[in-house]
Image 1 (cartoon, rainbow, N blue to C red):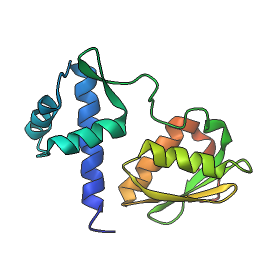
Image 2 (image 1 turned 90 degrees about the vertical axis):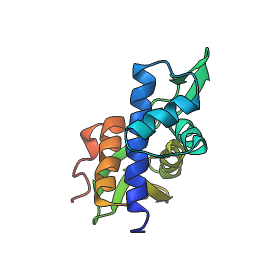
Image 3 (image 1 turned 90 degrees about the horizontal axis):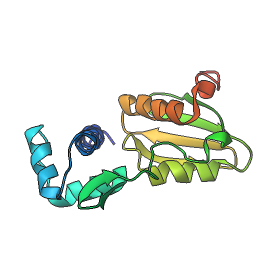
Length: 158
């Protein structure tokens, strides 16, 4: 997995640049985004930009790209299922949910395509979310904190 860590961090940075560009300017085509990323040190192809746009929930609306309002980051409608979350080791986050909620929350995390997350495994009320790196683990915790609040910080006896 060590080979993937720089890729995951690079993808997260690239997607953050795309989000910022879409919020700050009217972007008409993907070629403009390729040029924007290149100017910020990310040499990418149009197909890479296309995947990143899909992953951040951007769509072409009225002739320019926007992040669709129904695609806010987090766990829409599912945050109430999460009881707690905490780091476990350097690359794992344990999420505890209400009984029967783990698979729904894990599916939402996977569907959101969090770039920090390598993947998740869910049981009935517990999810293990693996990160590519230690900073990825912090990113997962930050995303959970934003989506759920601080109810999980240290909630599993870290």
